[in-house]
Image 1: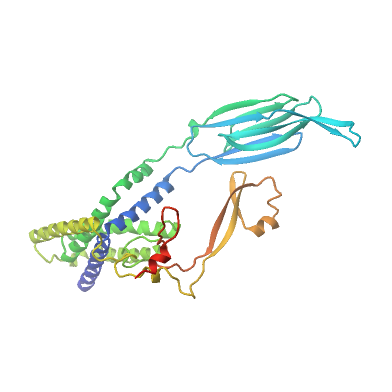
Image 2: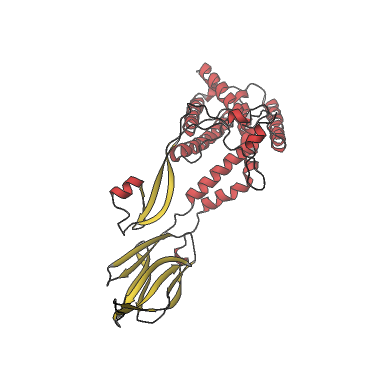
Length: 403
């Protein structure tokens, strides 16, 4: 058991020191990674927006239009009804005699100044055209209006709909995560330095109980981050070993899970972990490494990483790293059309739109077109190098042709 305890102590301690050192070598890169996590968590913890469903009906023409809009914590909505000037239309026969006539106008319904609905209205008698407009959030009707159009009667109605009672409050946790974002650099340096010091503390056997439980807490925290990244495909590179050893989220999670098992075993057999140095010397040693870690971090932050694993490091050939080999795997994409129905989004390919006759179905409302990646392709290591002048003319080729 003593051999197991000491073997795992050395392996785990060295891994923590190595991981912390790689990240502290590029604190800016790790701070950017932390900002990614803060943005993701702030977005995921934010209250989900309600859907505003607007229904416009006309029993005479069997009109039943449904529109959906996402509410983004707006305090109010403005709805406007208006008609254009009425026109008197006369239809003549070949000899120029009037055979029929009618009055015509156009009804426009606008939501926050954007046209929502438009329909031409024709009346041959004095009977009005009746429109029923209603809005609901979930099952609750928050607005209802009947609009009657008579011959030669113009309308302009603008009404405000109060939505303050429907604004969802942000949770305290979401506010806390947002508040961390400006301090990403400071947190990056402190986390990396703390990781190095925990690894050293484990290697020298300093305060084994405190060290092991702090290691367990840090690993559980990192395991949650990597699992969340992998399961929800949020942050595609956790930055555990920076740019030196890029890992996928699932690889990072497996690495953390293995380290968790190591620490768990060490907690069980901790009585076999003995301090290498005296308590007084261990304190001084950890204090020295604290100053060294923080000094190294600030130096790399102010200048550049001493060990530069970045893609634009000195000596890298930009042209070669920007070029894919002829046998590289190509990315496969497909155009996807998103339609809404009853407040829910549905995705359709071009073929599905035709096969299911979505275009002919008034219950579906077009929302947006997106390009969906069906299969990831190979990407060059450098894929974002650009050089353009103030007129937008590309100069990359001319630049790379120079000595």
